[in-house]
View 1: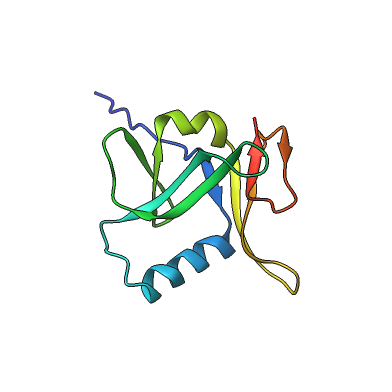
View 2 (view 1 turned 30 degrees about the vertical axis):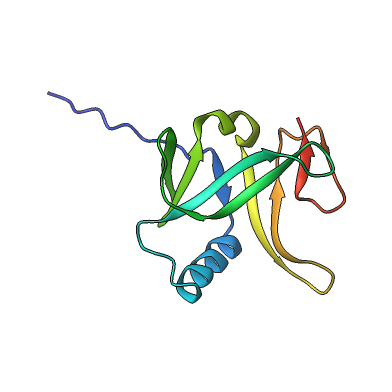
Length: 117
C-alpha cells in the first residue's frame, strides 16, 4: 500500500534577506503567532496594480503555504498575477525595502511597487 504525499510548491519565493527581515519585523512588532504574511495585489499605483505585503489573519478563500518557516497567505485570484514572483529585501544607500521581481508584470513603474499585467 503506497501513500501519496501532496507537496505544494509555493507560488512565490522569498530570498534569505527577505525571510530574515520578515522574522525581524515579526519579533519587533510582536505580530501574533497565528498571523501569516499576506502577499497580494490591489488596484492602484502608477502602473495599474500595486503589491500588498503585510502580516494578517487568514481569511476565507485564502490559500496558505509555507516558505521555510514563514506562513504565507494569498487570495486564490491573486496567484494569476504573482506566480513565480521573488520578494527580496534591499538595504542599500539609495533604496531600502522589499523589492518585487515579477515575471508576470508587463510594465513596472520606477518605484518598483506597482505593475501592469
